[in-house]
Image (tube, rainbow over the protein chains, first blue to last red):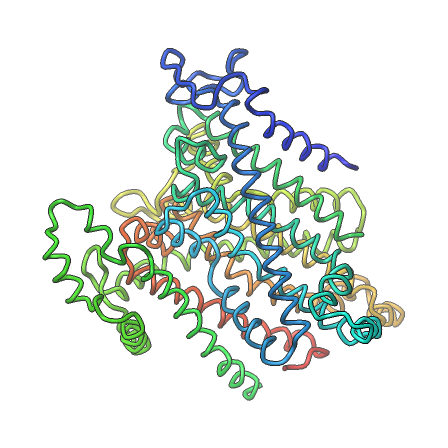
Length: 256
Length: 316
């Protein structure tokens, strides 16, 4: 059962190759063929400016997938750093960092992000940072627990006695032991980041038009549900396929 | 128990203070500050903005503003809405019933869905039923809630015309049936997404409990299987799940924001998106603090409930 991994690979390849594979440019306006229903010329139809939905959804994949992957990387890295420091150092550092983690967990994530992006009008790079910084807490808790359990073990003391510094102990001796936990939680973070980007863009505070993202295509489609349903169906199906594949990969990884 | 509640409450206070400082800083450090929306309005003169800034105390140092806000907020004075000048508390209270209704119905529906699904898939592990539930749960967890809402609207409101696409009643207020017809779709969206996660947790927790010696012992004593499952196993298995159900209040807050705006449900979620569009800082601040307060409080209740259900868990 490697179906989800293959699906993801296909999506990533299609996104990277979008300028070559897509039948039209994402911003090619064709006013003669506005709001066209799906047909051989426009597989997924066209929007209110006659732009090809397939072309936009493939170019949107570049934005949505990059945000998902990079934001999860930011979340994972911050989570490892914060959780690792807390678990390894213990004492007041641990208390301080874990209280901050609790505080962040007690603020509803999507509303907080909506406020931040509405006020800051972020670029894609900043959106990655915002979504990443709103998603490190789960990883931090898990990494802390792993480090806390491992730091008293003999191999750590051995490494210390052999002259390894704290950073080296954490990165070389402790982190590999937490690799499995980190992998699973970062996989979940990828799916969550993709969902958050789509929700933010759906509310008009994420990726700004004319650039296409799966979320902002849905934002535009909202008004024409009755007359051009394909505009709302296609991007949503792409989001669902992606998050389901990512979650399936994570599920398999955690079962191992 | 009293000591436990007392201690946890004492811990919650600094946590909430930290959150309030974070949120306050985020809102007020933004470019332009709370009055940014007036800067682009040609009908508002610069001297008016200065006067407003002074009248609202926005020209004072941030720390001082925060103390003033905090002192007032704790005493129940949540300030006045920037957009319509009414008391924030009044605006929140009038929207609260709609949200409680939606979220309450959704939670009950989600539990009704998740309970049998979780127990059945744990008892019949690896069966066709288990795989079906797993696939449904995976869909629910991965589904963008707002898109699911749009899809339901497309099918049941636009295509079939069975249900109203948005709102809480027909204009002017309808009868109970009308009310329920409006409630079905938004509640279904919230319930399905929640039930997906909960059924998975319950399955895992139930499988772990069924392996425990006391379950085997009960079966060996000749306790009927049904009773073993529902009384001996389900009760302790529910403990951790109940904790998650309560903690998921955080997800429900986000879910309510999304679902309420898709379906134009006139609750706190819609109040949030409206206030965000108008940069209504006082309302946003109050809503975020209420949500955080609810999440922190539910966490404490969840821990307490966990012990009541499972005697092996000690209060710490």
